[in-house]
Length: 305
Image 1 (spheres, one colour):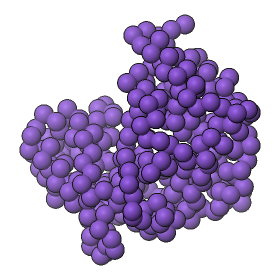
Image 2: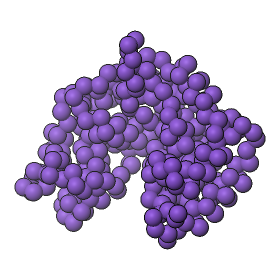
Image 3: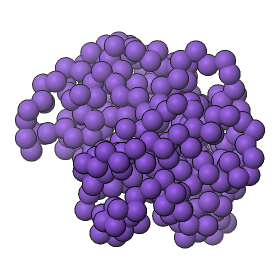
Image 4: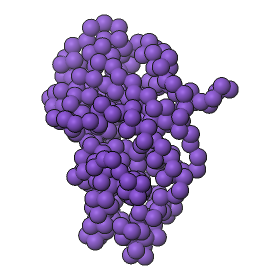
């Protein structure tokens, strides 16, 4: 059976995908990593409410990216045909991104913090419209786009109060828990990086800081009688391993995998080599794995399911 790669996420989710099957064979010992994660997961600190969890996660991601770089401009936020076909709309998205860039200049006043959160929420909505064009009729952006009222001020007003409250709580917690990563000097920061092998199978990470690959999760965790509990899924582990092996040119010199569970305020870190050796059950030659994955992906190019 042939397979047309679309994205790393889709490949991992498909048990018949050659890449997923390779991960299953090569990295089967995930339980020790999952057990260690559960043991140090902590307790839920920021509960959910009515705000869309997907939009909230994307907004938090954008907010942290702007905290790293005031000049970050997420092109994907203006990539939806409903926006990209209107130069004046692109300009408004860029203005919103400029306002979000104030996050890099800490400490922030309450009014500035509110603005950068609102701006990040607006950019998340714009990005969702690109990723899922079919969501347009029910998107909060539909009316501004149709009516021509697609302005920075209108976009900033779209964030509901619950979203502002949750993102603010997540952000203030992150400033404490990620303080070391967020503190200068930083010699190399990559925001939303793609990898050499991403041209065969779409894959973009959240943030890489001086060789530390940082993935952000805003999930609530599993509901239990004693309260919610965070856990690490097989997809989580395969995702970060995928990023590491997709960097076939070693462009980002990844040496540490870090997953930040935002609602629990917990930063989980693994030396990359240690993580690979653990889940493989034996020493891993990273260069050899990267070469194998590159060959696997390139051999599937052009095939259809």
